[in-house]
Image (tube, rainbow, N blue to C red; front, side):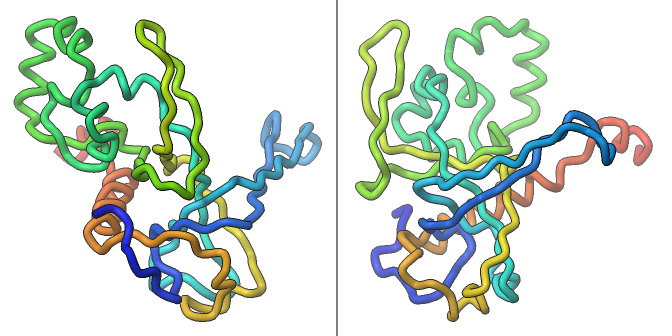
Length: 208
């Protein structure tokens, strides 16, 4: 089960919320005289990415739920259940069959030796839910179809100040829509931890 049937009256990591405004700044270059603009978004839903123990003091981190990439449906393994991208998988399962077949033998061997890994480490997909707006997935070689799968991108996190988020139990209760099960929340925690804990090649060389 992806979502918990009974929603607690408490803010948790991974919760789906509504009604929050997200802003970001865009600049041409980092100096005081650069042109800039402020983007303001009001997504249908967003996800809490503050750890449970860090929610409060009128500050929270959120990421908007966005539509999934249509290319995910080119992969039969993912098409059966897009939330599989949240968990480790075999190398052959992480790409469409035609992509795997196009790899040279040495690349296939390298990937197979790696064993199970996380694919699209910056993304976490939320299972379809009747609360989510339905949208059309465009397809090139088959009919377009509709889905309610959504995802968050760890590169797209906003910090928000909200006077009414005092702590996990003192917040605008009406803004909470869905809550993850403990297992799903663990998967989200594991994947975002892997996203932030990756070691660049140049650091690995120095460590060796």
